[in-house]
Image (cartoon, rainbow, N blue to C red; front, side, top):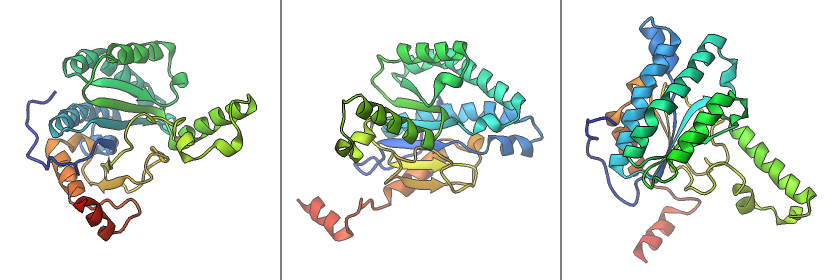
Length: 254
């Protein structure tokens, strides 16, 4: 992990438990430097290490990174092959560091499309870090929010057909149990780098009350200082969850 210390941020109950990040801008970062696209993705790995370190210093409990969407298969074949190789290398090289830093790894998404070898490495990395009790690191790979909702609906439908459930039993709480990351706090903050202002099919169900922070920085340029700015911005917000400001003040006063 990075040796640079995170600039001082607000440590309070208002700080996010769960941060989700759409890591955008690797290709454009590389293009600006007249480098191949894969060079941007490799540079982005350094930002991943930096942000993981920053989240640990800030007391964040869960970090979810959008690494490869279900739509990213449409990219040039050479880039996709390079991304899969980079993913494989990262799994091999980073597991010892994760263990050393007490970080638990989970991969979310439809892993069935990955090679058998990559699926095996994913399972091994998850198993190796399952004993860790610190930061929960989730990597969304071949993940799509619509896929997530559909797979949850399919499991519920199968339960109804099998007589385990009645349709009228299905509510938001039950549906939620079948979605990805249902055992973890919902994302408090989503950061998107690269200047775009959309969620790109990421954690659609989970983002119901998530705060969003957009930055023009490309992902390889996003480090601890940028993370600190995002956290400061988040901590200055009032999260009402459907209540009024007055109601929140009453709750604080109890």
